[in-house]
Amino acid sequence: MTKLSHKPNAKEVLPRLRRLHERRGQDRILAAMQVPSAALAAFGVEYASGCREYPDPAVRIEFWDRLSGERAAIEDDSIPTAFLSEFDQGLYGGLLGGDVQFMAHPENGWISSMVAPLLDDWSQFDRLRFDPSHPWFGRYIAQTEAFAKAAAGKFGISHFILIDGLNFVFELIGATETYLSLYEHPEMVRRAIDFAYDLNVQIQDTFFDLVPPIEGGTCSNMVQWVPGRIVSESVDPFHMTSVDDFERWGRQPVQRIFDRFDGGVLHLHGNGRHLLEAVCTLGGLKAIFLGDDRGFPPTFEILDQLRARAGDVPLVVQVEFEAFVEGLHRHNLAGGVLYQVRGVPDADVANRCMEKVRAYRL
Image (cartoon, rainbow, N blue to C red):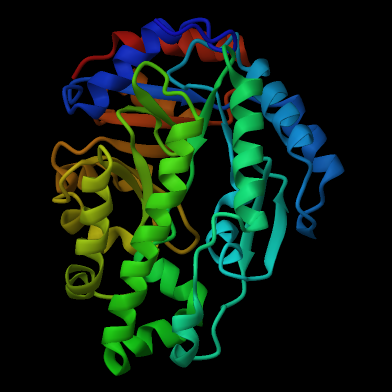
């Protein structure tokens, strides 16, 4: 069994996560407890939200080391990980000549990236080339290697989001032109999706080559840990379209890359819940993170409905501590769910609560 100094009870947690993601945990619940963090507080003081330059990888891994080290005393179902947020989205466009912009997020310690649309129009598509000697690929490899070395024996390194399918077309020509192109230039959209598949495979293969698995699994900022080489997919472009559009343009690219690896995880925002039944039929889907967004009912408040619609697919949801404790007391929490519990006062409270979580049975 892999030993992680920042997660002394990993040998108990990993089998619980395995059971969940293998869809054998419908009668149980899991929980990741979010307690106040000195590392996040310090990050918030140092980094005001807004644009900035590419950060020093040594500074970034020091932050993740401190953040995960603070949590070593918490006996919950989380697996401590560092997240390569700097390559969250901007890496893909940056590799093709885009101007990568970074933004700090004091609420979670990320420094994320994006690019403006790369192309003026489809006539420029054929100039796109992936060059493994590109400086951004060198930065990606160097930071991933540095993270993996610093994390060894302490914590894991999370996979990061794919930018394929229509997400990649967004990076090329912007969202509005992407939707128009589904009708005006469908063949170019298909060519871009094929290009994106090859690029994403190159990036993800590199990640799995450089980051050692933990007990044969992949660490995940979405779902903690999953057995196998698992990718993190996004169907965000279809949150604002119909299910029919997902079936026509989204299913095949997602299925193709899930099949190329050992499956994948997804996230759905509040405006994407209409896609739930459709995405749950994807082969190799391991879990879905259901986000909370302004203007939509909190996931926890309608969880029974969503749980029924999702079948036996494992779900990850956010919930405030008081509501979670009440659910434990009333014994009405949905099973097959990993609850991300926010606002937990401290580690002692978290650990007492986890005793009830581990004993919970439907």
